[in-house]
Image (cartoon, rainbow over all chains, first blue to last red; front, side, top):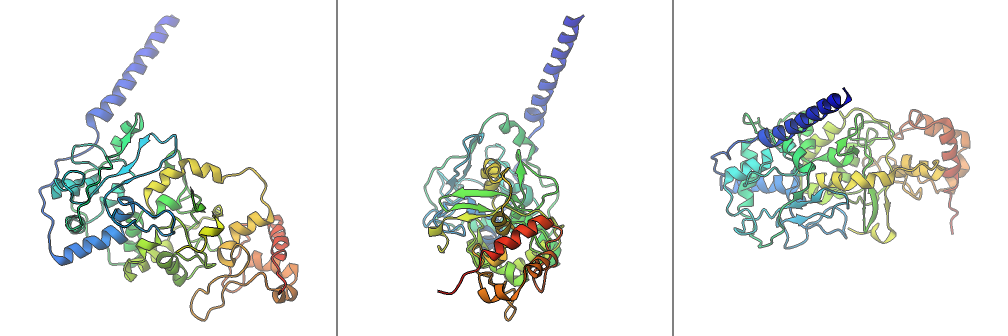
Length: 323
Length: 108
């Protein structure tokens, strides 16, 4: 009798594992052929794409080397968009690389079609069908209107090609299997960015990935009820920088800070007490349009209050005055 | 901003948590330093002409206020300073008052 039960359990287990593998490898990632599109080449489109890539979407921040000796995420000269190999914790499942996206034909995206780039940016599928690791913010970029994505591609086509082979991410099992659930085809053309400040700001918060740093994670998932409540600490040569609570709570968040206070943090990397902010990529936001940053601030005012006090940054003395 | 940071911190976040009891300094750094500075030196005004967050090292200020007044200000806020009564318990506010008093710096 016991043998029969054990056999039954074993059969169920095999069926469950088989079903899991069939689902992830047979039905995922959800993808479609790259669309047949052509990026414009007008100066206006290129400038719009440059703006988005540098000051909103963070393309330059991830796909370039960053000067870790300075605050604000300044791009190392000569590496713009030519890729970056991230330093990851020892137990990270594999390697993490933001590939070279300059027009270099051998090591960059020079041979990619505009449609392949569009699909990668918004839908998380590489030219060869691979699932992109969701560090690439395609979950938010899927909301980018066609015109804006094509503008980004138009800009990428104008960047100086850099021959630099950084490879691509190699994620190990089982994470490599689970990330296949992340991509999602864009079913219908997303609408233009809203003009109403709060709605525009809410979308910009997603596109800029603010919650990625300002919401604590546990086992790769945002902690429930802690949206934007801060508490991630990043360690580097500079010491330890912890993301603050940016909910609308007056004491623990930014509810009592003025728009000028927040604008100063976003554009100049200065805290309310005048200290320089580390890890926060303010060098990139410095070039963002006033209306976009005002919209971001308007949206932050709507983030539900959370009273959690975030941990404290500890910046080494010789890094505090760096610019 | 960038998602890479979320990944870095899967591990690093654990290092930020501590089981040690919070001292007055810990509480100050978490609740007050963001506006008044890590050393109590004060901060930047919210807008041109507005009073900046107070310099908590000023002997003049320390001479002027009582512990009860400091306690009440932390609890209920004053001017642009928010109330911390829903964030800090009375015993934590007491510990903060003691620490704030230690920030006083006499002129050289």
